[in-house]
Image 1 (cartoon, rainbow, N blue to C red):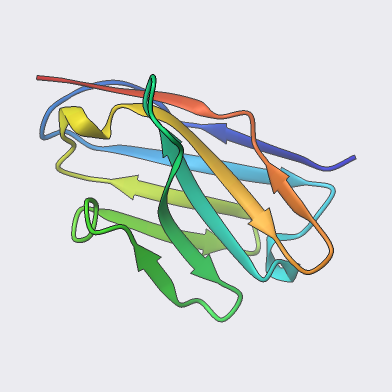
Image 2 (cartoon, rainbow, N blue to C red):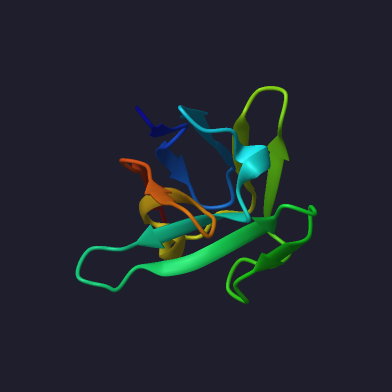
Length: 116
């Protein structure tokens, strides 16, 4: 039984910070080729926010570069997304995704709302 569970979302004022967590069971994140954070605003398409590869390299969407940091703690089997200097346009449902040649799994999402 594979499960990815996101947590850490909530309501925050612009300029504030949140740290999202994605905890895995049934798989180990260290075995994944990459892990990504996605977000989807109401009425909008889901977009890729950040990725971290098995080798630890990271990539970010231009809209969050310099503000967000993705990291992985293999010992805790958890991936994080540290979000600083939040803007109202960061509002949306955030999902983590782990994939390899053999699988791809999505979490249930966590809501982030950034007020002006």
